[in-house]
Length: 221
Length: 187
Image (cartoon, each protein chain N blue to C red):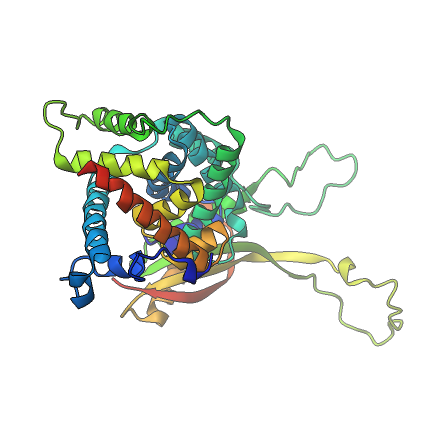
C-alpha cells in the first residue's frame, strides 16, 4: 500500500496527522473542524487504552516453564562440540606385534570445552567482554634433513604438499572482545593473554602457541 | 551482559548464554504469538519452535546486532504458518468479548490480579482495546502488535515481515483508525 492511501478524514487530514498531535493543544484547523475534533477524541481514548495495555501486559503473559525447559533440553542435546584436539601426543607408534596398545584418540578435549575454559579465564579480566573464541592445533612441518645439493629436481607429482609431515606446536587461540571505555587496550589484551595462557596450562595441559586478540567494540562501564 | 556478547557466545555453542537470551525473549515472543493466535497453547508451541530454530541456526547469523530482528522474523514466520495451518474457529462478531476479553480475565486471574469486585478502569479499557485488536485482520494485527506492544519501528517491521516500509505505515494507520473507531462504543 502506498503512503497516499493513508486513511483520511472528511476534511482531508490523515488520522496519522491527527495522531501526531495528540498530547498537545489542537491547532487552529482542529479547533474549527468537526472531523478532527471527533478523531482527536477517539484517538485520545485509544492512546489511554494503549497505555493501560502496556501497564497490564508485561506481568501477566509469560509462557509456562515447560516451554523453556523443552527449548533448553533440545539445545543441550544438540551442543556443537567441534573437533577433538589431542591432549598429548603419543610417542612413536609401537611396532607390529607390540604388547602395548596405544590409542591416540583416547586423550583429547573438544573445541567447545576449550572455548569454555578460554572464555571463563578471559572473564576474569574486568575490562574485557570476550565474544568469539576460536581454537586450533598449531602445527609446523617436521624438520627435513639439510639439503645436500644432490636432490632430484621436484617433478610436482611425487612431492605433493599434503605429504609434508606436520608436528604439533601447541594451541592457536583467537579471541574477539569488547573493551570497557577508558581501559588501556594494550594492558587489557596483555591481561587476557596472561589469564588464558595460565588457565590452559593449568587446567588442560596444552602449550599455548599463540593468542590473537581482536578488539571489535568498546562498551560503557 | 550485553546482548551482542551473549549472541556471539551462543554462536560458539555456549548454552548458558543462549539460556539468558531465551529468558529475555520468550515473554515478548509469546505475547506476539498470543496476540495473533488467541490460544495460549498454540502460542507456547510457536515460542518453542521459534527459539529452537534460533538455536539451530544462530551460527549462520552474520551480524549479532541483527539478532532481535532475526528472532522476530523467525517467530513471525512460525506464527503465520500456525495461523494458516489451523482450522479457523468460527467467531461470533456480534459478541467480540468472547474473543479476547475472557482470556485477559483469565490472565489476570492467573497472576492473582483479578478482582471481580472492582475491575479498574484501566483493566476495562485494556480489555476493550484487546477486543478491538482481536477483530483486526491478521496483517493489520501483526503490524499493530509489533509497533504498539513491541516498540518496533516501521523499518524494523518491514524487515521482519518482508514488506515495504510504506506498506507497514499504511497498515498501522488503518489499524489505528479501526481501533479508534471501535473504542467509541466503549465510552
